[in-house]
Every structure is written in C-alpha cells, then in structure tokens.
Amino acid sequence: MAIRLVLEVIEELGLAQKNVCVIGHGCYGSFVQIMDVDCTLCLHGRAPAVSTGIKRMRPEVAVWTLQGDGDMTSEGLAEILHATARGEDITCILVNNGVFGDTGGQMTASTVVGQRTKNTLDGRDPDYHGYPIVIGDMVASMQGSAYVARGSVHNAASIAKTKRLIRTGFERQLERQGLSLVEILTMCPTGWFVPTADGADYLMESLGKTYPLGVIKDITKQAEPAD
Image (tube, rainbow, N blue to C red):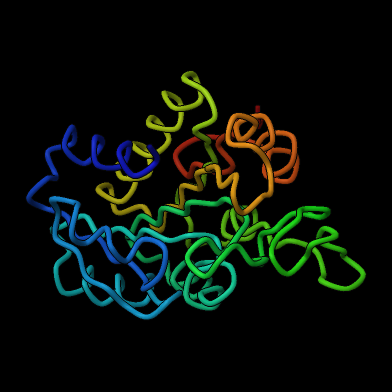
C-alpha cells in the first residue's frame, strides 16, 4: 500500500516519465521489475548517495529513494545524514516496520524498546541493544531538510493522510527547497510474532508510540503538531 501511494502521487503530479527511483538491494530490490518507473539498484543504505549523483546530473527529474528502516537507519545512516546536510533536492521514502524483513526479521536500528524480533526474542533491551534511532527527528533538526513527515497505513484515514504527506514531499523537491523525508509506518506481523489480524493494532501500540504521526518539519510553514 505504501508504494502504491507513492506511485499514485507521481502520476498525479505528472512525473510518470520524469522520475527516477533508487532502491537498495534488499526488501524492495524486486520492485525494479514491477514498478513502471525508471529505477536503479544500489548497495544497501547507499540510495541517498546515488540519488545525489543522479539529481545533480539530471536536475529536471524527480529523484526519490525507496528504503526500509534497516536500509536507512542501520546500513545507510551516514548517507541520509550527509545528503541532508548538503540539502540535496531529493525525496526519501522510508518504509518503517521495525525489522529486517528480507533477511528473516532481525532487529534494526529503528526496532522499538520491548519489540520482539528474531534476534531479540525477549524484546529489545536498551541496556543491551541501545535505544531506537528516530531518524525523522534527526533529519528534521538539520538545516538541509525542507520537509519531514511521518504517516502510516493502518487504516483508511491514515492512508489518505499519508498520501498527502508524500505529495508534499515531492512538491518540496520540485520547489528545490532541500531534502524531503517521508516515513511510512507499515506492518510485518510475521516479524513481530503477532497474528496478521492484529497487525494494525500492534503497529500503533508499539511503533506508533515511538514514532508519532504528523508533519515534523515543513520549511514553508511552522510544523503541525503530531497526531
């Protein structure tokens, strides 16, 4: 659902033939074969760096990254922070479910305290594993960021709002305001050890408390309070 929203926004903005998606090898690597947009693959976590090169060579196209939380906050923390520091005119889409889905459901840097994963069977313990990295807040605190927002896909209302957040993220790029980051909380019941039917509730009861929804930063106006 999260990816569908991005593609709908791209079409509605008239960017279907004027965009490039950069994806790290991993959970979303296969999407290069099913999305009808220009895509390129890169090493895990390096999408913001590759996007920088593409955008600087082709400033007329919308360049965006598609990254999971393991990709961005574990392997690619340096890349997203340095791209932000430079104020690159790219849009980064972070799909956050708190686990490494492609490798079997291990802890990522964004796994919340108490969350069970394949290698934190008793839950993430901050005394042993440290605390989660809230990348949206980090990026929002930096001068090079233009727009940072966090949505989810746990119900119809949230899906509609998340689409609006994504659209604004691309609009800020088109305005050449700086880097935009839109984080989307998604579900991975298998990786969470919960029944599929309980996925939406678990998402907001666990990840939702650490990652509140809303606009964190919009350079064109004062940020809205989180939901």
